[in-house]
Length: 259
Image (cartoon, rainbow, N blue to C red):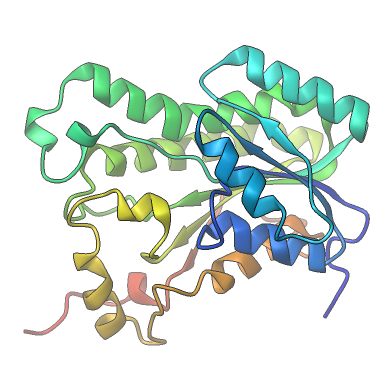
């Protein structure tokens, strides 16, 4: 199947290097006919620009710190002048300070918790609502999640932020549905991305995941998640919003492993 995103304009956040889930989504979106733009900020934007050169055609890279309203306004203005409309947004943004991760849950102060919640959850609302006037009926907003039903090793306040992200997506789905805008989440299994590498102890989950997922799990293969993003961006899910779709080899559906 080809041409799923033919003629669509899509904004993709979160591309750092070729291990990024967002990179797989960007590459596949282009293959399926979309015109894309990437975002980056601070020192990371150099990585994003370098990685953008691996895509064909090379997409523009816009500066976007989602915690700065003026950046969102500037991106909205750029896309209005560049395209005039928008058909999709991939929210692949998450951050928590080191003291909010790695087993420090009971020791983390509010300032670090607030940073995690604002960057990883509130940003979905800030970005979507900031670009709402560009989103046409039938548009799709997709956010990357990590199943927040459980308390994962080392994930700590990022897990709380993901729970907030899931709730934020549901409320956005409620309030934007009347405009024909869909908002959905993809819960991926653990992947060896640059972001995951920074969470001390998080890699422990990977081995258990492969043993328990009925379809198995390759923590170095981001393409299944990228395909799911492209699918949700397409017109093949016209009546689905507020949903969380697992792309995790089936791990989420299994009970506790037998020791």
